Structure formats: C-alpha cells, structure tokens
Length: 322
Image 1 (cartoon, rainbow, N blue to C red):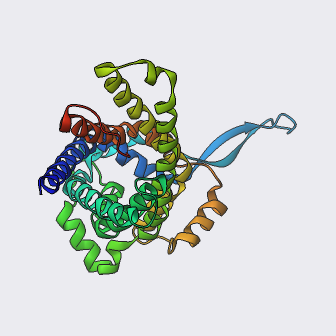
Image 2: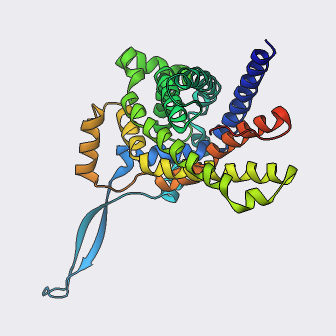
Image 3: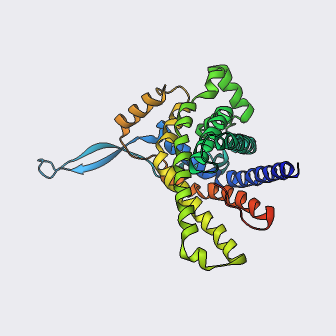
C-alpha cells in the first residue's frame, strides 16, 4: 500500500515539474514559436524579389530585371512583425499554449505510465523496446486529445493584423474555426502529428544508447557519492538534449506539413498530398529550422525540471527515460 502511495506521489511530482517546465518554456519561447510558424507557412515561404542584371552585350547597355523567389530569414520575419504588427504579435497563441501545456503533460505522463505497465508484461521489463512503445503510445493519445488546442494556437500565430487593429482571442478563434469548418476543422494537421511520433521513437533510441555509454564511461565509474550523482544528472541532461536535437532534425519536415495543413483556405488537403506539393514547389529547403534550433532549450528545460523532481524524490537521481 505504501508503495502504491509513493508511486502516486512520484507521479504527481513529475506532473507538477513537467507542467511548470512547460509553462516557463512556453512563455520564454513564444516569440520564436510565432516566427517559426510564420516561416513554415506557405504565405511567407516564397516571395518574388527582383534583382537587376546589366547585360553589357546589348547596344544600349540597359539593365534587365530578373525575378527570383527567395525565402525570408528569421531576422526579416522578426523585423516585419515588429514594424507592421507590433511586439504584442510575437506572443500570439500564448493563451492556448498555456491552457494546453499542463493537460498535455498530465495526459502524456499518465498514458506513459499505464502503457509501460502493460508493455512490461509483454517485453523484457524496462527495456528500450518498452520505453519506445510506451512513449509512442502516450504521444498518440496526447496528440489526439490536444490537437484542437494546438490547431487554435497555430491559427492565431498565422493571423496577420495591421498594428492597432483588433486581433481574435482564443475563444473567438475557436468559434471562427467551428463556424467555418465544423468539428473536423479542429483536427487539421493531426496526421502530421501522428507522423511526428517517429521523433519520440528516434529520441528514445538515441537517448538510451547515450545513457548506456555514460554508464560505462570511465569517468562515471571513477567518481563516487554526491559527485557521481551530480555527474550522472548533468550527463543525462546532455544526453537528453543531444537525442532530442538529433531526433527533431530528422523528423522536422512533419512540422512544416502540419503548419500547412492548419492554414485557412489553402490547397493543402492531406499529409501525403502536402508533402508532395511542398517538395515539388519548394524543394528540400527546410522552413523555420534556424528558429526551431533556438527554441529547443524549452524542451531541455521541461526535461530538466522533470529530472530535478526525480532528484528531489529520494535525494538522488533515479535513472528514468526522458
């Protein structure tokens, strides 16, 4: 009975740490999230720019104008938002993000714990396979339940208003989506989110390999006591950051496809159709990846607080998967 009570307290501690980390990360990285979403959008993906060219072989030596398409960079988008919409627009979508971050963490941790119990009875207990399947199952359920909130967040981030004009709040945006597209509109981009589960699987695979390497490293075996616990903690933090970064780079295209699917009144209809269309029209250029790389510390921050909760739990770190 005591064990069950302790597990319940540990679960609540992890939920609280994850919720706090997610809230802090959402606030500080919101401007980067807005810029990233704008860069991924088809409305900003390609803009025609005219470069003058001088043809010396012509009789008059007159210049000719050659049109070409370029993708705006991070600083260009930031400057455009500040000049045309004002600093307040950099925090578009923060409301639904804050509303959804705690429930999404709660749903994820709860599903992960239950799935882990089930998969431990099927596979080798606490093996890499158990962690991967548990994480994938938890991500599937979380994406299914939370997609309406993330859909509203994306729509708000994509909304462009002239400085001083009134922008829709969270409830107004949700009402507009329902009136124009119905319930189905809240689940646009869900297939891309399902494809993003591969990121979780890749992350766990890399993380477990790095954790095993750190455990067998000479430095880990030579230290002892509190110093060893501290080394393990920060070593696992580095492993979590590296694994998350590598996995997100590999699976990043699904984020661009998801943003395109959530745009209002666009030509993008399904996951495969959108992927083909983006590839045919824009090639393999990655939209918003530079902004995404600056936003990654938020994921490490959430992970850090979850690990810190485990550290506080018994005064030392217990090895758990990120």
